[in-house]
Length: 491
Ligand SMILES: Nc1ncnc2c1ncn2[C@@H]1O[C@H](COP(=O)(O)OP(=O)(O)OP(=O)(O)O)[C@@H](O)[C@H]1O
Ligand SMILES: [Mg+2]
Image 1: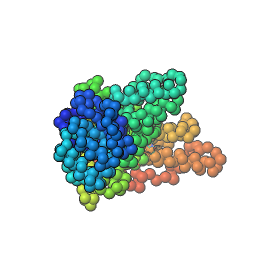
Image 2 (image 1 turned 60 degrees about the horizontal axis):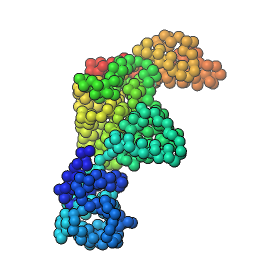
Image 3 (image 1 turned 120 degrees about the horizontal axis):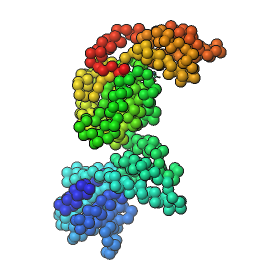
Image 4 (image 1 turned 30 degrees about the vertical axis):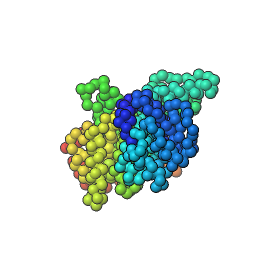
């Protein structure tokens, strides 16, 4: 573990003041036990409740009162340079005396070359100490350690219950891999939940695991875990998108197996409203066989003023910990069309997003959807940003009859009793959503009459609807003309 080597080096170099922000105190202690095995220093622990005690040897000398002044005095009196892990000590630095004493230790005034380690969930220091402190991130547990946590929890359960736990080895390996990115206590809590639910670890635990992990990681609240991914069987048309995903699935999931192929990174789905872009985004996740996480671009801006970029950074970092997954940015134009009056925030957001898309290593596949091209910044459309820009057009006749068949069957009507060709001919210019709507409204009419809807009822419902492509002919035509030259047809 290279972080431990770093820590050992810092201690050997007699770094006077370290700050570690974490709630995982046990982990800090374990890390430093490793350090003193190399660096051979006395290791001390302090908390307000227990005072100062030695961790590497049983204590021999008399106990020191736990208060700050007595503690710092005792540390200063120690002739042998030691490591002092101070848990939640920082609030006491509000007192002038404690602050002064600590500064003198850190600056080696009548003091041996101790290393003081301040540990707490959030350690804020007075400016004069901050300047002397080195903040170090605590590394998260690696696969080996996580596997150890899982084994430990399983053994604990077996002892407690007096029977064997059922473990599917493949599933257990997948579980451990998916715990990466979590702190040890979080990982332990999740594993315990999975084990205590049914005394077994199997493939059925994976959705619960992903959901628990997602809840822990989504601190910004900007991500939504979409439990229902779709399959390409739920969507008519988009055959090219389906083939594209199928061809890339293996490389996306194990890029190491084919180093000469660039792993797929993302697509932009551009298209007419109601033609199945959102559905296609879900089908892509289903096609890759990974969870779908939606980034709420709208709330990115209005949630906390001034924290937009930080929130985006955190949200994107969280998706990397959920990898492999699909990150779906729905209606991306809404989040990027900030115009000139937002102090440049939307430009910076776009810049960060593009850099992240270009540089991320994790298996996060981005699916962005958009209705309006004129609101999309040119940088986003430039070649190489997305692997492909697909245009999801109004469905052609054959696709329309498929959509009719699909939605009739979904509502327990037998498609074979309808003339699908005639329905398709009568619905030229209708989107998938509008076709679905006519079936729904025919069902309502029929419920009023007490008979199931038939062919004339559906044709009647079609005549009652004026499709968007007619109402907004210019916009739809302009979009199609633009896309024809620049995008790949989705079907
Ligand atoms: N090609 C299709 N095949 C099957 N169903 C479809 C298709 N297109 C649309 N639908 C139906 O219409 C609904 C709405 O479609 P969807 O939300 O995916 O459209 P969209 O392109 O994302 O629209 P918007 O631009 O308004 O977000 C879908 O849930 C589905 O029931
Ligand atoms: Mg949509």
